[in-house]
Length: 493
Image (cartoon, rainbow, N blue to C red; front, side):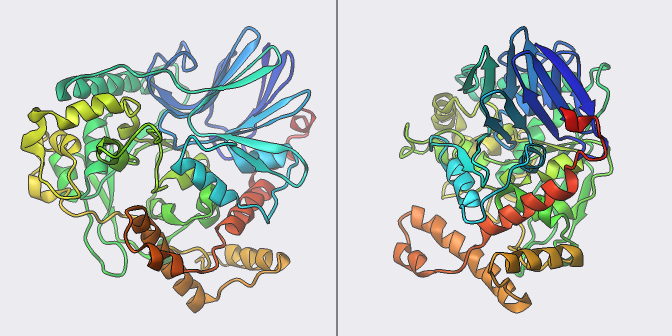
């Protein structure tokens, strides 16, 4: 099997599309994708860069790519489950991409505006054992999606494989070394001289547990700066992590949350049809490529999965809060790689429970519903004072804003799309009200999972156009950002 590669500079810098036949893998990719004669990759992993062995049990993978070995090709996705791959299996070819709009454009596929794409993806993210993992199209092909599995094509067979089992640890000290060793392996990969393109490590940070502990874990990478939002929402509560960043000796870049400053609505809505990730558009990313450290899934890994009621029916990556999962397309355009340290070792729930419940962790327990001794110990050992973080959960997610954009061209395009599909888009006042109440409904649904206010949550019924917004954003990007027309030779692939 051989690799035929073509770079398309007008494509988003980290996107790629692969067509696999019996003896050839033909690839189109953006201008910041790393490559060799045997592999394509956008991102980094815990292993030697030059060997390109990310397909062979790399303990941490950040990004997506594939590797050829004789008559086999292995497609890999981030072990942190923040990225996605999509594929279509046809009789004589396999089509794979790390971007849904890219796959739609090159494979000439159309989404069905009547299908609940957003709900389907969110259902899977909340329950990774949910099947089937398919998205229908108007053209008959089914699109399969992956969030952390490996896809292996070999001798006309195709199979999905979960990542290998992670190493065990029995104490906090062993867990700390477990994390540290992987950070050093990633650092070596990032600094490898054979890389064509360098990336700058940057972290998010707030007053909560997860982002601060993630920043502390990732310090060996040489974090350039910490991104924080000083005030969020109508109540203007302060969730700035500036004090924590100062203790960690990381320079701070702070912004004030303003709806008028949101950007890249279509890129974010293409992820899940939700606007929760718009906060990340408030920041500038001046480096060519950015490795962005986030605390996503820390609430599950360091607290919820360790409770007695958690059992084998739960997958270690299940997440009711899909924050950061809607950035899968946005990051490809912005040159950003998403790394969530809480996911490292997350499959070893048995080990994490043993560490969390041990008497050695008692000095780092504060009691209550927001008690996470593991991340608290990580931060307090770095000199961060107890009362400066993890005292009250605030969550710096953006306000719901899905119908009123600061970009007039986007606004007009969305309004036209709604009209073409027989829908009337909410106006400025009603749209704002719908988004506010929709956010409240999601909170009530979360409370319903805790057996509280169930009847009240069920009474809240509002039009939810997440599925339609998902279709609009992906079709728009497929049409505008993934054309191969400028490259006449590429159209022959």
